[in-house]
Length: 310
Image (cartoon, rainbow, N blue to C red):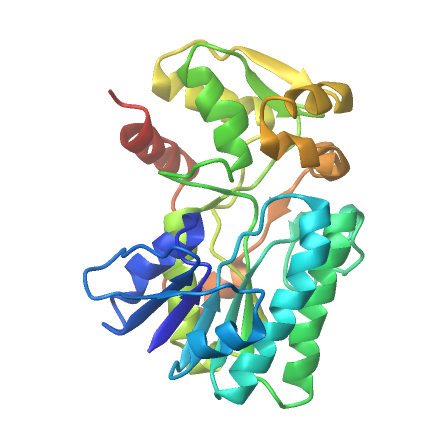
């Protein structure tokens, strides 16, 4: 049995699709899980309840974490450490391997251009401090020999069918599709990597089912040579057949947008990711596995075909 905790989100759905290549025994766990594959087993659980987490992973060989708590600092403080402790304890108790889907918020802001698995940990934001804390919890248990696990890190992500959790979707795809201006934070002139969610799902499944991948950190496959903010907007607008109307969002504008777009309310402290090049390196993964990440233009076309063609 391979179990996904936090099934139903953008990554969880893609992971469930990808796991079909490795097993027909897939358990999807959330408060209200829904099948992705016909043979999926559904398990309803409160992931902040230690007993329910232990019951949810019982009998699993591999446990994947793709949980996405609401993007709110207060909720993150309350939920992430507690949830991570529950998962670690459950995996140790039931001898499950753990695959933890992570982001890059813990990295030093001075090293975002070419960040890889060795980038210094020095979180510049409150959310980043939480991510560093939970990653440390997992890595320390690995070091103690109590847990077999890996951390799979993604850049900001984009992909088809995403609702409310992709910055690129909320600030570029959606506005341009209804004739409004795209919003880009801080500056249009810096490069910004995005990981394509179908690639992330396939790669996470591959890592989980590769014995040699465990007890280390991996960057998930992400296309090289990312666009600048301006190039992202121009490419998406061109594929949509609309004008690339743009406005750059200062911290004041971001706060104003937060009145209408919940995701934006939490973004002022994260704007450092947009005032410098944000280039995600996944050479370690592509050197170990025969996997080519989806080119950006192909990803854009697939998203428009899936979500914006009437």
